[in-house]
Image (cartoon, rainbow, N blue to C red):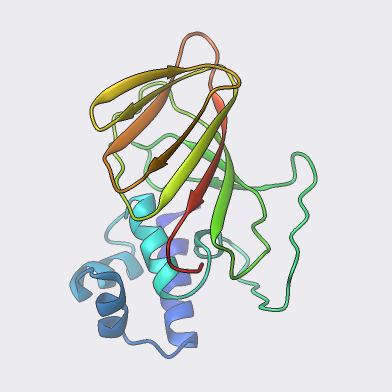
Length: 188
């Protein structure tokens, strides 16, 4: 996913929904100038900012990250076969996570489920609205929450308030693979 495509998608959807840049700024608590830079591919936003924009435009974040802007509000079920989730790479090389979006065709959902392959050298700290659940499928996963470290192994899980600063990374020899479910208070 290129930053250019993300900016075009945000602008196209915003215009399709007849939302001004100022209205989007008001809905997201981001500045009009910052949003303009994102739309013009002059700024690479972190995932949490893209998620906030998606919520304000009433779509799931995978929709904004998609190369194919098809959206239907009539789908009541999203069935995903093994290894057929939509691969979404986070924006900017500094994040290094690889996301496989599950249930990505279901609009209006309250949860965002992903299979994540975690980077080994992650240094970014995340903090955003909502709650998260993480279940380790493979490997070792170092999870840092509010400054405290937890080493998670296959079968371990954690449920937390994502408004508290947190980060994670793969540790050991094998890249960690986790099931992550993000929940936002506002309907997606």
